[in-house]
Length: 402
Image 1 (cartoon, rainbow, N blue to C red):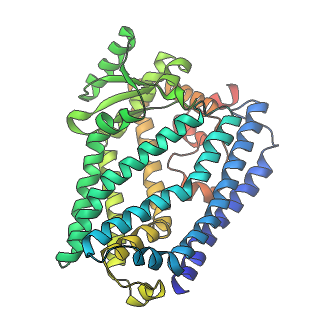
Image 2 (cartoon, rainbow, N blue to C red):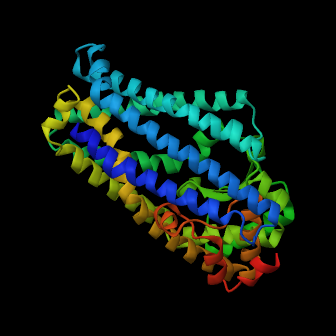
Image 3 (cartoon, helix red, strand yellow):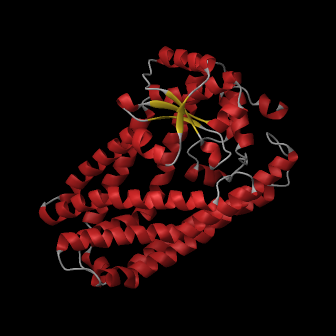
């Protein structure tokens, strides 16, 4: 009961409290005088945020129940079904554990994408596409997860101070994911075609050259087959870096604003923000490994299992969310700071007004409600609220005249 009580009191309860604060805040603000969005869009965005938060609240309670099931009997039961060979047992145990964890979250994901997002005009994909995406994700989980779990289990079985070596393996996996995601993984889910607009292509290349960004191409992603939201990003590291534009973005935003958005993304490149966030995430993982490596044996006995490669990694996965919960505001703080700096850099390449207009279009088209509870913002927001960004650009007047 100790582990379950800690999980409930220090993770589920604070998370639910934040959700309730946010829900009460949204419900109190949805009927106020609208700004940034017109009256109908303002109410629609508020309703969308309220429904999303209700799903999050229910999901938090469900996660607590699932955690209890794993701790009280699930881990021990799964272990009893598997062969005795330590390495094989660990890999099979953890793959089944990961697959079950993924499948248990599917109902919430399906409801969000296929019902809520479709109702509010975001989701354009059908259930067939959702199933295909899910199957591909599970196959990647089995393939990549199988490799990682095999290596990690062998290290725990054979090497003292195993946590140091697993940290190195995780760092390699994270760097590898950033290197290979745009060229090998992302194309499994979306189609990427070279930008077929010579004038825009030239303008983008001039912008990249101005900053010293070496790219292996500018590509348009068929995001509209799933979603109506707008976005652009730079993917990859080193020679795999590429510019990705959502097709929805090209349809809804003028060229100057598009260049301002890309200028913002170039700000992240210029300030090494990707590497900074990788260091931050690896710092969290180092802390997580230290905690798992020093868990008292009584916690394993509470789950009716002994310390082993699979039980250690299972605990690492189960405890990553509650421990990560307290790391979230730290990541949010630095992420928001990076966003302000990237805004400043992007505006210097184009103009404050161009970037401000782009941000306004993104909020309107993405149906983002412009208000949130202050504590919720501090905890979860990786991007500053729109009005704060507009004020930093000295363009807050555009929110009142748009």
